[in-house]
Amino acid sequence: AQSVSQHNHHVILSEAASLELGCNYSYGGTVNLFWYVQYPGQHLQLLLKYFSGDPLVKGIKGFEAEFIKSKFSFNLRKPSVQWSDTAEYFCAVILYGNNRLAFGKGNQVVVIP
Amino acid sequence: GAGVSQSPSNKVTEKGKDVELRCDPISGHTALYWYRQSLGQGLEFLIYFQGNSAPDKSGLPSDRFSAERTGGSVSTLTIQRTQQEDSAVYLCASSAWRLLAGVDEQYFGPGTRLTVT
Image (tube, rainbow over all chains, first blue to last red; front, side, top):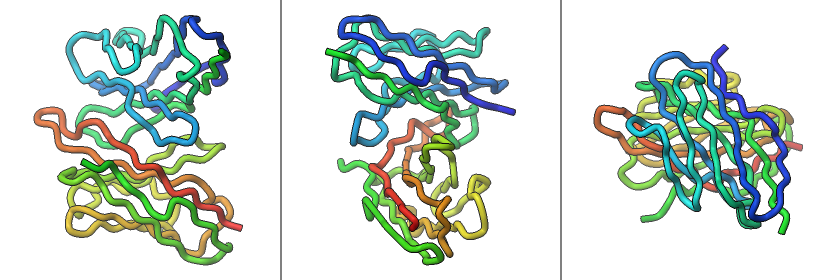
């Protein structure tokens, strides 16, 4: 079945540590890829997106993600996290020409000051 | 302009009652989506509107769920004879149409938290 996988659902790290969240999908064909973030008590917000072009995508708040087509992956990274990065992070995929977002289960990230 | 808005923000209802959830998309966005977020199932797609028509309603979990969109704007999700398993946060999103790529990124509303007692 087509799916989006995110591992290590709960991540706890200290400020200034580096963060990498994995995302793998099982769809064939052309895909559009997204990372959304949900801060405590807030709604889902787009962190970054990949449609085409440079596979290294830079988003807001110092986040970046790399699309590796051969590995069906779109991992999210941030070199140095802050307490304010405490949130739940969701990877999402849309098949080109499709409309529905398929989400991973999310990563709950807690940054300790 | 304003983002996606949803009402009510919270709804508590008794099992067996009908509920209506409302979504106001971003002005000019032709595409509108409903998703459901629950602890056990994560984020699930329910239905997609392009204008007033719903070419993809395959995510609706049962015939108790229905949705409509009028004037290419406001949408209402209706759940009839609510069950406890319907308890979840119902999210609405909207997007513009992106030339050559179809729909663009989706902007989400704050959601309606539905609790069925």
